[in-house]
Image (cartoon, rainbow, N blue to C red; front, side, top):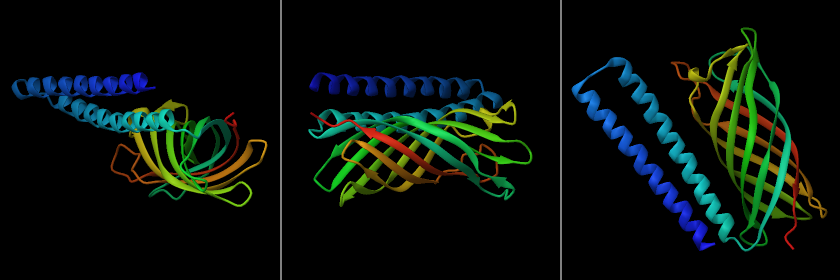
Length: 231
């Protein structure tokens, strides 16, 4: 266990050093050979590096929690998304898509747990000018309070990395920010068999548009999950 934790730390430190060194070389080059197009590209690259550092750091921290936890149970989950975009344009409607991935349910006590998940999530919205289809790899880190016979309420941050975007039939990934931060609220129920139901609302906190408009994700989720019991 300690061996794998050390490997994760070494990987993270090497990656951060290499990206920082690459940015430093680009800044030095532009200082002597200024180029407006390269400056714009460097700003975009710096923003993507920063967002990926945040996501990678959260993944590593969650991995440590899973490795060190004595009461971790793993599972799979999936379900339907009802997604829209909150912003200046009111002529939008829900886009129906799906989410699918895995989870690690980590008991901190009898009543409290942390549940990191790694999910694919189809998001976006429908509107008259053409449907917006957004694909994310999301990492929710959910705090749960458990009570009664399998009931749980939950909340926590969700970190998202954009993997694809289309407006109508046209590729539009460059028109959206690569990183999304949301906050999740929800409730669920786990049966004695390990099968459960989960309902969640993800409120977008960051502007996902790469232009002057302010657009944020808004996603309702309803799904099933199966939690493998630890023997």
